Amino acid sequence: MGWHCKGWQTQSQAQRRVASCDHEALGSLRVMPQCGVMGQAAGAASALSLRQALPPRKVSVEALQSELRRQASILDETDILRAVAPEA
Image (cartoon, rainbow, N blue to C red; front, side, top):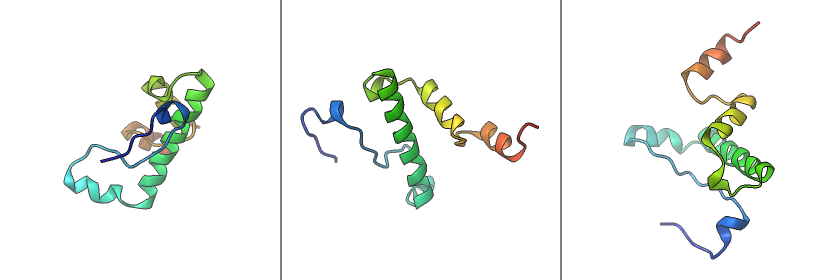
């Protein structure tokens, strides 16, 4: 399941729909908005990787989450509340 190409992971980044979920949530992952959100996360991770001169796997999760929140992404319940009732 998947493909391999020598040197590929050090030269470029690709995004696939790889997620861990139960069978009920899987249905919602197959629609376009979720694909777009995962693509945004992959793009943000790639940009951080380039800015920090690190391989993509070495980008910290905290830095990626911070960048996604800066881009107004919703990652958890707190972000939903922040989007619904932004600070004045």
